[in-house]
Image (tube, rainbow, N blue to C red; front, side, top):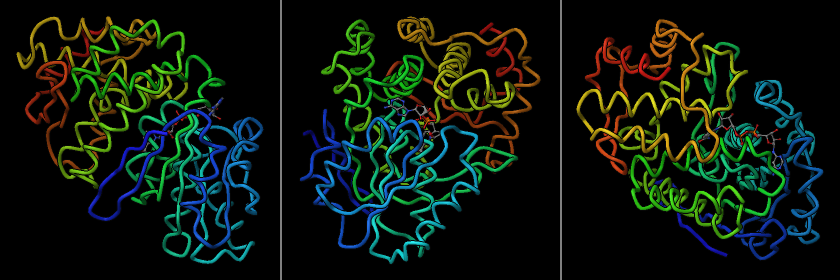
Length: 358
Ligand SMILES: NC(=O)c1ccc[n+]([C@@H]2O[C@H](COP(=O)([O-])OP(=O)(O)OC[C@H]3O[C@@H](n4cnc5c(N)ncnc54)[C@H](O)[C@@H]3O)[C@@H](O)[C@H]2O)c1
C-alpha cells in the first residue's frame, strides 16, 4: 500500500493506493469510527465491487444505498434519497458514509455527508480513473441544478481516500482515456517529469499495465494534494487545475453534455489554451503540438468540430466565469510543466485561438 498524505489547514487525511485495497480490512478499520456505516454506490458499480468492499468491512454491519447510474441523476432528488435513508436509519453524527463509485457517486455522497447534521465522516472509494486522479481528492462535493453543472455544493474533505486501482480493469476504454486527459493536465501545468514519463510510457498505459496505472495515479494525487494543500478553497494556485477547463466547459455546454465526456472536452480545451499561449508568445512554438502528440496516443479528441462556432464558445465561456466581473480568466502555459493565471487575453485572442483548432 502506498500512502499520500493530504495536509490542509482544516484537515489532514491519507490517500491509500494499491490493487485489491477495497478488501483490505486494516485500512477500513482505521477510518470507520464507532457509529453506523452507509455505503453509497450505483447500479453499475455495486454488482462489481460491493462484495469486495464488504470483505474489507470485515463483518461490520453496513447499510447500502444504490443510485441510478449517470450524470443526469446528480440532482437534488438523488441527494434527498440519501438524506432520507440516513434519517430512516436514525443515523447519528458518528455515522460514516462511504462513496463507492465514480465522480458522480463521490460528489453526491460527499454533499450528503457535508449536509447531514452539518457534516458526518466521509470516506471515498473511487472506481474511475477520473475520480482516482482528481475528483476524490480535495473536498469539492456537489450536485447539478437544471440551469448549470455543480451549482450547488460544499467543501467537505474526506477522512480518507482508498484507491483500488484494480477497479480500473472493468472501466470502459473511453472512460480511461478521458481520465488520462486530467493526468496529462497535471504534467502540463506543473510536472514536466510526469509529462515526459507519459510520453515514454504511452504503450504500457494503453495496455493498462498495472505498475504504469499505479504510477500515474500516484503522481496525479501527489500533484493535486500539493496544490490543494496550498490553496484549499481556490483563492489562488488551485485555479491552475482549471487548465483547459474554461474552453472544455464551454464545449460541453454548447454540445448539450451529450457529445463529449468531461475529460474529452478538457483535452480539446487544453489544445485551445496551449495554442493561445503560443499565439500570445507566452510559451515556445511546438508546445501545443507536443501536447497533441501525447493525447493522440490516448485517442483523445484534439480539434473543435466545425459545427461549434467561436461565438457560441465565447458566449458559454462568459456565463461560466463564476463571478469574475470583467475579462476572461484563463490558465495558460509558459512551457510544459509550468502554467500561469492570465487575465489579459482579449476577445480577439480567444477567437483566434479557437479558430486555429478546427
Ligand atoms: N469533486 C471534484 O473535485 C470533481 C473533479 C472532477 C470531476 N468531478 C465530477 O465527477 C463526475 C464525473 O466522474 P466520472 O468521470 O467518474 O463519471 P461517472 O461517475 O459517471 O462514471 C463513469 C461511468 O463509469 C461507471 N463506472 C464507475 N466505476 C466503474 C468501474 N470500476 N468499472 C466499470 N464501470 C465503472 C459509472 O457507473 C459510469 O457509468 C462529474 O459529475 C464531475 O462534475 C468532480
